[in-house]
Amino acid sequence: MSKLKKRIPFRMWILLPICLIALLIVWVLTLAANHYKDTLIPQHAASRWKEGGAIAQISCFFSVNTQVTPDSIEEFEHNLDTALEQASIVSESENEDARLWADAYSASGKITVKSNISNISTDCIGIGGDFFLFHPLPLLSGSYFSGNDVMRDYCVLDREAAWKLFGSNDVAGQIVYIADVAHVVTGVVEHEDSGWYKAAGLDGAMIYVSYDTLKKYGSNNGINHFEILMPNPVKGYAKDYVEKSIGISAEEMELVENSARYDFLNQFKHIGKLSTRSMNGKAIIYPYWENVARAMDDKLAYMLMIRLLFVAIIVMIVFVELLRYWKHKKWTVKGMCKKAYDDITMHLSKARQRKKYEKQKKQ
Image (cartoon, rainbow, N blue to C red; front, top):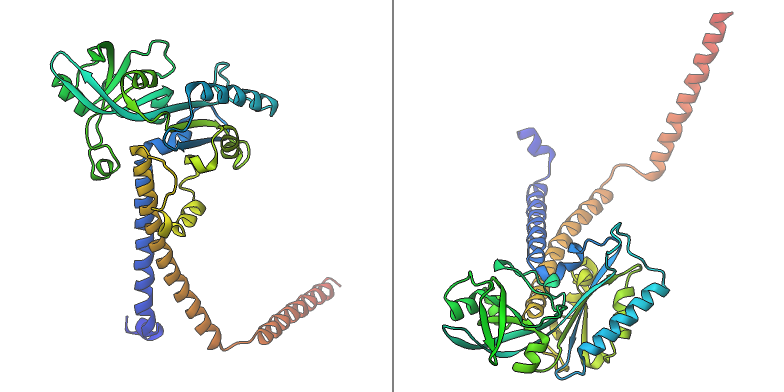
């Protein structure tokens, strides 16, 4: 052990633990960042989409009272089908009924709901399309409904709303009344009650109804959110198409490519936006899931900054030690080249002598 201590300079007994600790911190932060990203289920719809091929998930958030309607979204869908057909983009799935895209729109608002036991005025999301494909909230009982259903008198309650209205989670199939119109409770979902979700706007009971129901019987500011899964044959294709074809100006809309949100390059770019992140001149009210995602963006950016700092420390230590080694080396490039040349010459000379000896021996 004493001989080893003499061989290894004293500074290395300090620098090596520093590098190991820095590597450990980078590793732990990387695992933590990956875990945090995975908890944001609505951001990973593209990875759950089973239709094959390169798929992008795009989210649009509109300013208050922007003129987005179910009819304008239907027109967008029709134009998308035409554009994909003209680009010869087809499903790679063996299923003949496989879809090339799926979308959903929603509006945030308030609504009053009555049961045989009580009534509540609560936050509400009015949905259209495949909303629960993007937001597969954990079911406590029953099932979801589709915003594409012909019958619009369905609803999904979260746990808190179910308890306030019925005193139970197991209420799938029960009837609630919205403006004296009967609606069937298809299911009950878990209520996110962490601090982040409360701060993001999910600070009370939540009910999910069709957009038609919210528009007719509740209060809202129109369709605020649009989400789509669609082919992305080349990087940026889906995002560019939605931005140009949705029919809303950039001043009235915020567009996010969720499927690329947590790429390293995008996270790195986000670091430069931290100082101006909270500044927003658009009249956009983000839904609770986007508020949580934006808070996570900031958290991951800070974690990335710390990881890069410790990586920089490791790189700096290695660079300084290599520089020190180079400065105190006892060899030169010229000397190494000469030694290599001499070794090769000696090897060739011995080979010739061995060949000559074997030839003489045969004679």
